[in-house]
Length: 326
Image (tube, rainbow, N blue to C red):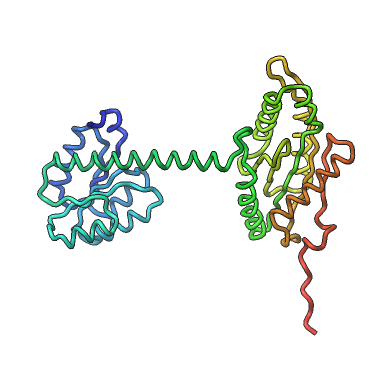
């Protein structure tokens, strides 16, 4: 099936060939069929065009001055984006064709060629690209489903720990702080006892939304399990972290959870801990455990409040002094 004009109008094709007559011929054919086309007469000119105009497909001549097509092909393949490449050449030698395909070309056509054949090969490459794009989108969606909690849309704990380890490593490298916030809904059992479980799920979904609305783009939030949540704040000091926790606590306290006839007001208890350049020995699980201790203190001291756990009181996490040689 031929691709529609609307689809073709979004297809970008870059022709790279030092033969201006052939370039004009190919461009004329592609223009007629509604493709977006640009041309370059050398590999260096093509690279310059690609800095602002990323093609979906490149038609690349094998024999060009300065940088030949095979070397240009390898350089194109180092680009972070993937696009189809069709090599064209007057060389009919089978070894040359094999070398071009092995170097990373998606197709190879020899001169002279029928324009209709080139158009058919282009359509074939776009069909493959469409399938590959759909597969990439499906994989991205699958990864999103694997990494996130389906109820709240926040990260799940499996993906959270790898992200936290990365932030800790980055914090150590650049002497930046990492804060872990643990929060737990107070008396959440009353939600399920006084309402059905669907309302309990609704409440957790709403809490996830409140958390998302409270964090910055560089922060990380996850559902830790049940009605417990974890937030990772980066490049933040104790006072700012406390202000964040207090604002979140107040936001939840003042929020009315309502779905149909069901309605409830809830509070939350929050604990947090922060690394600093003097606590390089702590890993992700230990930092979460310390924040959880702070959460326990918040629960024990009456709930609906914020507690901080000071890492400096625990020498096992702190930088060990270097002993002087005797």
